[in-house]
Length: 312
Ligand code: HEC
Ligand code: HEC
Image 1: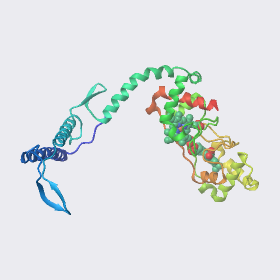
Image 2: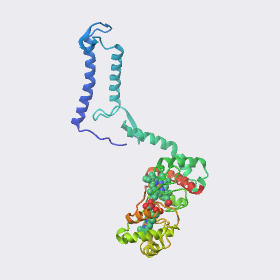
Image 3: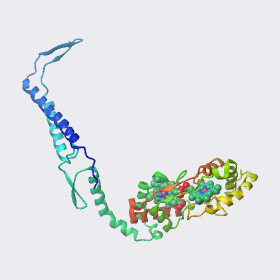
Image 4: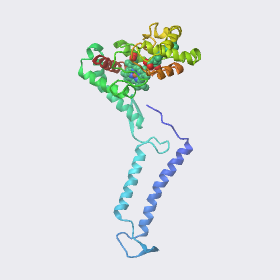
């Protein structure tokens, strides 16, 4: 249940007075114009003014129009009575949320529907969550559910097919920042991940950055490397980078430090992009899903991700 913001009581009455005042003002206007005219009495009389020869008959409002207007007024009053919106008045409709009777609001209605869905699907999720990931990936129904969970929660960053994009890792290859076992994938989802790649401009200087970038590209097997610059970069790498990326540059999953010796790049492997990574540092953030999805759904979507990496 959520609390909605309230007006101070002066402004609440202000809104109520203006709203009801205008509605009853309309009723009054309808009433007096009705009284002053004979219904069903079309005349040839005009209002007496003429604009470029255009004149106006002095006829009463059509009946059907009157009744429509009255109907909208009645609808409006019923609506204002049932639903919140009239100043601080909460409306007469109520809902049951967590065993408590609360006024109708969009948020409360949403909470009711979520709770109903939860009751419906929780046993199903629980049943699937009891099956180990390795087995779950052969279960079509679970994979369909996993795919839907992925589409709703992960696709915005990792792409519809899970192939990622600049800064968002591809989940379908077998190259893992943090590890691709079911346990590691679940850990990533439960707690989220924050990568910390420091910025090196201040320590290495611009020339140092260029040299180390050449060395990094050499490690990954690129041919367009200047061997001299790379050689100058090697000791700088050993001194500054090996602690996280490993002496051989193959990375460290405990820290999410990527393998730099393959040709898979999270941020791009051109000289420019590697230099940019080194100059400014990087801090990729994978949000935690524990609260949003809960254990059972995480198990299912983790199985789906696990299956993606194995199908490719
Ligand atoms: C807001 C964007 C965002 C969303 C939403 C998101 N992720 Fe991520 N995810 C990332 C980023 C960024 C990383 C890489 C973090 C880093 O740079 O270390 C990542 C990393 C991962 C990893 C680790 C990959 C590896 O190589 O170890 C997995 C697994 C993963 N995400 C799965 C998911 C799943 C499943 C969902 C949906 C439930 C999801 N992500 C939703 C941004 C997102
Ligand atoms: C404190 C640990 C740490 C140190 C020290 C460190 N890195 Fe990193 N590095 C990381 C992490 C973590 C990432 C992943 C960043 C992300 O996912 O946002 C990363 C990412 C990178 C990338 C991007 C790889 C890609 O796939 O796009 C490059 C290149 C890189 N580091 C090179 C270096 C070099 C060169 C040094 C030394 C000058 C260095 N790193 C020092 C932790 C470290």
